[in-house]
Image 1 (cartoon, one colour):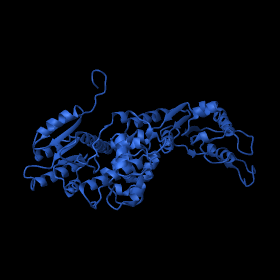
Image 2 (image 1 turned 120 degrees about the vertical axis):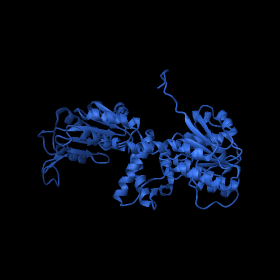
Image 3 (image 1 turned 45 degrees about the vertical axis):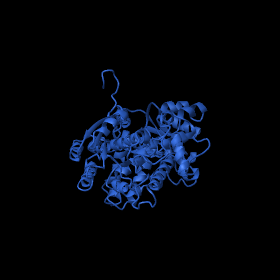
Image 4 (image 1 turned 90 degrees about the vertical axis):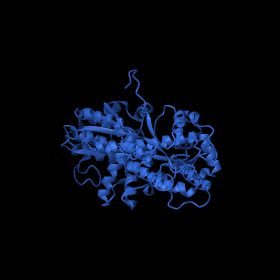
Length: 503
């Protein structure tokens, strides 16, 4: 931390590999302080820099003097080296060669993106930022693998600051006897946290009973929790102990407690206050010694104000609260979660899958994950079942997650037609990821919303095709990103070959 108390901003390290140093001088002025530029004038020196693991993004000139072999072979060697380091480094190639097949071949050899000279600095900035995101993702994954033995706390996975805080809370509350309320969206792992608390508590050797009252009739809920006496109702041929008695000395996890009817809330309150229960068909109190952990994805405070949840019960169950972050709020955990699920399901389904491709991980990192960790788990399992290779790739993802992948078949037509084809697919992928929300799609693509609208019109992308809501959609609100975005992007294609890096 700096002496003025501010957290220092990480300076992105850009390596320029170019026989002419004048371009590096111009680019340094254009990029300002966002990037620290280093220039080498030959490819061997560039490869040496890659091996030092001190570079975030590379700009490589493809047009060297006497650019036929062996110099082209040296460029290929550089791309291979950039991809072979533990955290692959994205390489952006610039060239005067306007042949479509040349650009496609460079991408196939591993380039992150290809730019035509003369370069458009604004477009280049967008691409550099996207490339830097990929570098960060790769390094997070490498760090996650290194920290894997330390990233599990009683079954929970993640190294993000949000999860470190959850680990701290779980460790503290596990040691004491009190009720716990776990709040979070569906799929965030509320039951997993409850089990972690139980496993780390003095009650770990006793039973853990989980129950969700969702969509069950009140009499069934009461029977499940409290049990019944023989003859209590038709079909009750013998006495049955409920979940509370079965968990004697241990922990009961009650999921979706906000779904309990008010009459059932009264009975729950009595159990917590008196530490006894009455089975259905009996008035004899039965002592119970359990720890209650509740969970909800609803706003119980609002329900209390509305009179649909008892205030006294709320105070009883929420002595200690844990708020779980959504997966989109801890994106740095996505690589390690994906790796964990990949290893797990590879073993379950007996498949020889050894990892995840960089583009597969990049796609996971950019998705919003409305279903959180549960959705990620399902996506990994489905992708693994479909996978034919030794790695999970974007081709294995469900359609709503698939970004633009470089097709094995080169599109027919002119260079500009090929670029438009790739642009169109990339825009559609972003819009589908965000359910047609244009503002969010523009943010992901790192372009302004006005430019996105122009591209939609130019590329003939309909609202029905993209899933966009035309009237009253949230994207119609102008946020800070819109104001800061580029207002006059060029409409011609003399800038970038959008192969996964930029527009």
